Length: 423
Image (cartoon, rainbow, N blue to C red):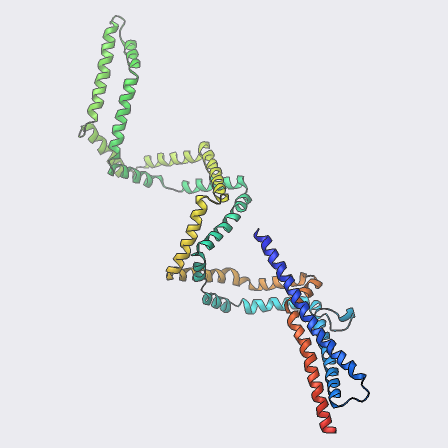
C-alpha cells in the first residue's frame, strides 16, 4: 500500500512538472512568434516612419535573440531538428563526464567529514527523533513499519540453521558457566530463608505417606522373613509395631529442636561453606551440567522452544491488536519522551549517530561518489535528457523569453543610437 502511494505521488509530480514545462515552452515560443509576426508585418509598409522602423528593429533583434537562445537551450538536451550540428546534445553526449564530476562533487563537498558532522550536530537529530516519536500517531506508524518488516526478516532465516545456532549458542554459553557458585548461591538462599527445614518437613510427610500406603508390603516382608512355626497373627502384630514405631519416629522428627533436625542444619551449612573447596562436588556438578547439555531431550526442548518462540512472535506481529504491538508503540513513545526530557540522553544519541556516520559512512564517500558516477553512466540517454529537462527546463525557458525581450530592447536602443549619431 505504501509503495503504491509513493508511485502514485511520483507519477502525479512528474505529470505536474510536464504540464508546467509545456506551459513555459508555449509562452517562450509565443514571445518568439510575436517578434516574428511584428517583423513581417512591418515589411509590408511602403514608407515606414520612425516609430514603425523602431518596432521593426526591435522585433528583428528580438527574433534573432529568441532563436539563438532557443537553439542554445535545445542544444543542451538534444540536437536541434535532429541535425548533427557540432557541440549540440551536450548533456547526453557528456553524461559519463557529468556523472564522474557529480560523484566527485558529492564525495568531496557534500560528504566532507567536517561538513557532514557539522550539519548533523546543527540539525540536533536526537531532539527531532524524540519530538517525532513522542507523538502517539508517529510511534504507532513506526511500530507498524517495523512489524510489517518483521515476518519477512524471520522467514528469511533457514529454520534448520537458526535452530542449530540457537542450540549451539545455548550449549556454549551454559557450558562456560561455573556451576559451583550457582549451587552455593542457591543453597545459601535456601538456608537463609529456612527453606531447607520446610524441605525436611516435606520429606517427612512424603515418607509417612509412603509408609502408610505400603503397609501390605511391610506385612508381606515380615511374613516372608519370619520362621514357619511362628503364627501369622504374631507376624502381623510385629509388622504393625514396626509401622507404628516408624510413624512415631517420623512424627518426632517433625518437632522443632529435634537433634536430627539440628544435625541436618549443621550438615547443610557445612556443605554450603565447603562447597567451593570440594573437587568432588565440583566434578559432579560439572558432569551433571555437561550430561544435561548433551542429552537429546534438552536438544529437542531447545528446538521446540525456538519453534514456539518463532510462532509466538509471528502471531503477535501479525495481529494489529496484539499486546506485543501495544507494548512496542508504548516503548517507542516513551523513548521519544525520554529524548525530549533528558538532555544527556540526547547528547549520547547524537554522539553515537555522529560516530556511526564517521566510522561507517564517511570512509566510503569515494565509493559513494563512484556509485553515483556508475548510475549516471548506466542511464539511458533519452531518459537522462528527459529527466534533466523536467528538472531545470522550466527555468531555461525564461532564458528564451529574456533573449527575445532583451534582444528587442537592444535592437531598439541601437536603432535610436544610430539615428542620433548618423542622422
